[in-house]
Image (cartoon, rainbow, N blue to C red; front, side, top):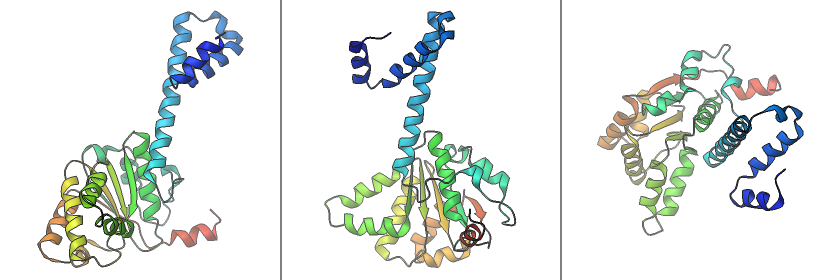
Amino acid sequence: MINDETRRKLREMNLGEVITILELQQRDSDCVAWSFDERFQRVIDYLYQEKYNSKIQRLIKLSKFRLPKAEVHDIYYHERGIDRDAILQLSTGQFVHSNTNVIFQGFTGSGKTFLACAIGKQACKQQIRTRYIRLPDLLVALDEEALVPKGRSKLLKKYCNYGLLIIDEWLLEDISDDEQHFLFELIERRHDCTSTIFCTQYRKEDWHSRLGGGVHADAIMDRIVHNAIWIETGRMNMREYCVKNKL
């Protein structure tokens, strides 16, 4: 049995999990037959798993997913025309390691956000720093940071450092020249060193005009589209389907 002083030291070192597993072992009569090495190994395994789980939950919380409960195994495929194999491949996180972009394109309510959050959550489980944000919110943050010294550069640095960035409602609204330049800088800095998921209603042929046209629109598209995995989410309105079927 560990004494109070040992408990205090373990808690001070943020190792309260060790106290828990030792108490569990103490109540398990089978532990009497275990060697010191076996008991110690089980303590380490338990500590590692608890620390890992805590880290994953922290990453998920910091990601600010719009749908934090989204899971890959809950994705509905029937009659949607979504490539299940492609989604399962994305869930491995390999696209992040190869710095590949992903584009979910489809009508309003077709489940783009759910798919993006589910894939993002899988990335968190692989300890990849992930961040979800709507493009309108990102541009509001840009306006606010413009009033702060070096605010723009700090905002760029913040969103460039995520291993996986999810930008929802991509090109939903018209963008100004200043916003176009900001998006170019963001995409340029993330190009070939990180991955970005885009959720959009617009097809590829509509992007150039939605991005404001000109050479910056060309450059943004080139950096996003040339190595992207493009997944159409179909026409089924998943919001209506879930309400109708009480999912």
